[in-house]
Amino acid sequence: MNRQFAYPKGYSAYPRGGGGTFSISPHKFQPRSQPALRRRRQLFVKLSALAGLSLLLLFLLVPSWRALILPSISVGLFSSSHDDLSLETVRYYDLSDTQGTAMGWHREERVLMCTPLRDAAAHLPMFFSHLRNLTYPHHLIDLAFLVSDSKDDTLESLSARLTELQNDPDPKMPFGEISVIEKDFGQQVNQDVESRHGFAAQAGRRKLMAQARNWLLSATLRPTHSWVYWRDADVETAPFTILEDLMRHNKDVIVPNVWRPLPDWLGGEQPYDLNSWQESETALALADTLDEDAVIVEGYAEYATWRPHLAYLRDPYGDPDMELEIDGVGGVSILAKAKVFRSGVHFPAFSFEKHAETEGFGKMAKRMKFSVVGLPHYTIWHLYEPSVDDLRHMEEMEIERQQREEKEKEEKAEAERQQKMKQDTKEEYEQGSATAKKNTDKAAGQEADQRQTEAESSEKESSAKGEKEDAIPRNPEKEGSSQDKSNDKTY
Ligand SMILES: *[C@@H]1O[C@H](CO)[C@@H](O)[C@H](O)[C@H]1NC(C)=O
Image (cartoon, rainbow, N blue to C red; front, side, top):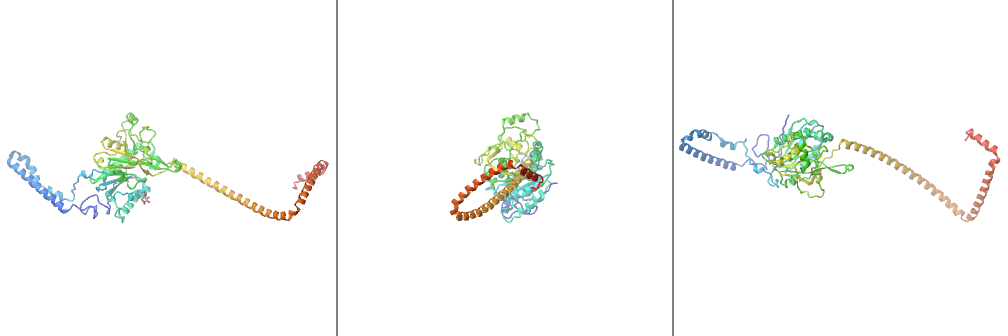
């Protein structure tokens, strides 16, 4: 089922009179002014009259031409072709106005922004935040969404957010025309990270994605568009000026570098989009060995192509304007001139030079002599979605963390207990020493005597010990009786 919504507010991409499903913003697109129309009509009437007169002359002068000319005269004289110009349903476009230039926003160049969505409800808040932050004049951007194979409430959520966006009281907020197209392509693979990025699923998945992109574009590209911007919904961080930044390069096809942030334990960051690359001899040789229908997907060990990837060439301190000619492009964020698509370049849903979808698009654009460029040091950041392995690892780390915290808590409690014990002992000691000090003060005078007494008593003790030691062998009965006692367990 295909459904299309028309939004009553916002800026129309079409300069035409009232009525129909589109409305026209009062400031931006006035219907063609009356004097201009009248001038055109007058010009046409004059031209028709001139043509009619010449034909009449020919008709009169060369009778053998009569048979040939008669039908065209009747058409010329009796049809109402010049009335077409005033018809609501006839529009005239000069495509040389929509070639796309470096400073498109100065020339009011319209951009068609295409976003394929599949089970993307969770990403929509972030995506709309990006939309609102775009600095390219919103009324010059038409939005096109394709909702396909979704099991969540992507469509409902999208509609609600679009209504909110187009009704925003800030006149700079609402976008141009918005198309929401719903169509399923039977994408079977689960949308989780593991399945999406598994090697086996790639070729089929990419071919279906290609079909989806072609449907979306061919259904929404209008003669008024100078540029087409493809943007995924799961981009986390991107400059607000990205459209102008990419446009300034004035290339037919241009992509930024795409990385993703990672948790610290995985290294903090990582190249994400490996589909933007330069062709290599190894890859061409590999392609020659493959079956006609085979599709090489970049970024998998199964195909060691040794291609220079845009992602790996990034230098965080490099010049963001540096350009690199590439052959394959990734689909996260592509700015292309509309004329590229008008010329017939598309996203192959089959093997084109052993590539499909966006990589095939890059190759096809190159093949048709369009410029295809990547910016290695201009980076946008894709959302980090943990893989099943990452999740498992994170779970383990969480358990470890809890255990560590538990242990730390115990250790802390133990340390506190010890501290308290020490404190108690100290207090006791201090009390004790206070008494001792008193005693010392009192006894200060008797110290010498005391020392003497101590010496005497130790002498006594040792002699007593000697007596005791001697006493054991001498008194065996006594020893035995004490043993009996212990046997009775009285102790
Ligand atoms: C949009 O701009 C606001 C305000 O600067 C910022 O808080 C928000 O994070 C931005 N959104 C995105 C998706 O970058």
